[in-house]
Length: 410
Image (cartoon, rainbow, N blue to C red; front, side, top):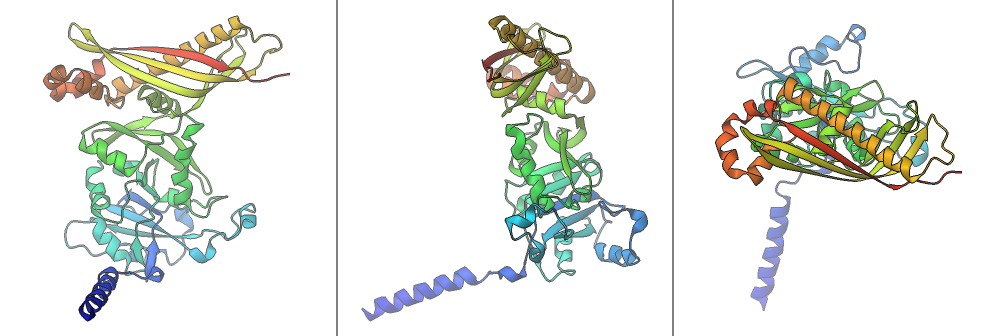
């Protein structure tokens, strides 16, 4: 019996030893909420005006640089620490806006290795950067145009990095986005990470922006899109998408482009469609989307395949403006409205497909995935030439609209 008790005590002791050998006290952790990656040189200034920098700016720049073993600095990484003591503590204080200034500390470090930059930051703070709570990664368009493979290696290998982190492409310096002081949120990185949640009501917002989704696209050699963002001093706007061919950014898509890309890829969660009223050229009708289903079918041609893109949309009549509405909600009006909605969406789809094919040649619609799944023998013959074939592929778009509810009016 004594041996059993001794064995039990030893096992409990070992459990405590193994659980605590690598423990880091919470007081010494710097909870990184956001990361911005810019090209170097020059060092990013963010939202500040370079002409109004303080006298200590030169010393600050020295801190932000580091001695390198090889090469020269290629990137400037900015990380965002929350200043916990300044965080909003009560709901009442939220409504009053942000009167205390920034509640975060942005630290920028230049270097050619993200691991080195991460460690160098510890020479400037008594906190150890901790990435388990990372919310957003912002990459400048200048960096994105040179490719993502090199800069993502650190984020893939670090065990603290979560695959659910949101990834964004900034128009201009990425640090500007972290420097935003939001009106109703303490931290810009969290504010930014929540914007894709509005894709349920706004079809022009990309919502599949996770690091994990990005890695799948890169490893499968797929073209893809990431959300583009811009900012003022206190506001961030999700403003379309950045288009990637392989791992390099090749251009921008506006908000309507983004809406069409999501429709064709069967990724739309909701939103609004507008069209001209069938009764009045100056009248506008709006449809609130409740359900979308898209099917892409390869069709044999003499020289290969074309694609039929069938989009079925159900929704509720949301608004009628610039015309008399009394007594117009007849069956004939609704049928004509469905036709006008269909024609409007079909025309937008054709324009966006033509733009992507002619300007970028990037198969962000993943037509290659359809071929690979449904016509594997043909795909095996053409997969090495697909990037040359895609810009000439013909598509036929058909959009069906069903108005399910017309709402109430008096």
